[in-house]
Length: 219
Image 1 (cartoon, rainbow, N blue to C red):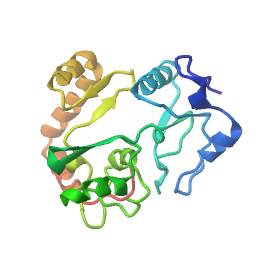
Image 2: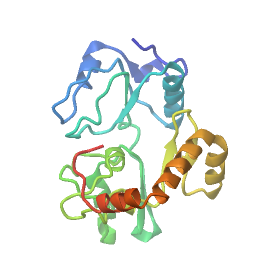
Image 3: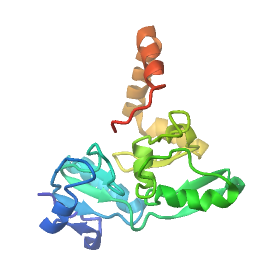
Image 4: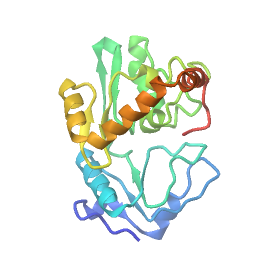
């Protein structure tokens, strides 16, 4: 059994059986009982939680609405739900873009954009229930948007936190340099994969072909 990470408030941590069972399911057929449930309130909580998971080798599964049909939002270890305190949004560029936290429902994002005659790219069937965190993590698309307007292809930038608790924002140019400096082994791994792909026409062509096909099976 995991312990409450010491840097986190006990108010956002629960290892009660009733809570663990409540988060053992999502919209899929799977049932995986976690050891604990944490509801981070801000990025600092996420950083401390990831540091704890990294130090103790405890798996952490992030979850928003839990509308997954493939089991992505259940897992052992700790379930981290980023919903209640993660609903901020901001219209940018006169409706040309929208900044969203992971707990915003996809349909609500479209409502915020409606006065600008805009909407987000992905249009999953569960858009009135699913949330931005899951939409991004799953690279959601939909019946109408296909591959062209899926989450990845319509995302301008993203703020993210790595497993060692460091945060980055791809809209900040200096964060690219900091990422390269601080994440040496990860960068080396990415560059190694990139070189392997570039040097092999068969793999390169297969990736291009496969990524033109809509993937609806989750991760």
